[in-house]
Length: 80
Image (tube, rainbow, N blue to C red):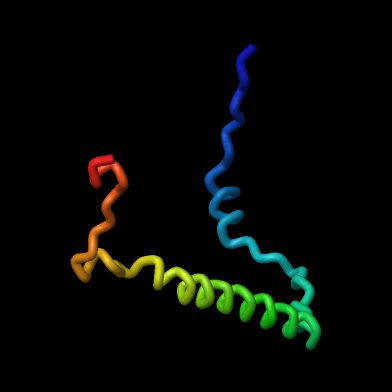
């Protein structure tokens, strides 16, 4: 079956664009002290985790002994 589309008068569409409700939404409640404290602690935990991972990860990213010219040799290269 096919759908029949009804024509919408232009005045209705124009009126719908400027429609304002006379019902005001309820005011937002301010967060309590415990909620603010909890959010702050979560934020600090995330930041501390990122800083800690950066501090522990930086030594692994350094070139280390390879930059000084020291090379590792395997036992196979010693003629065994």
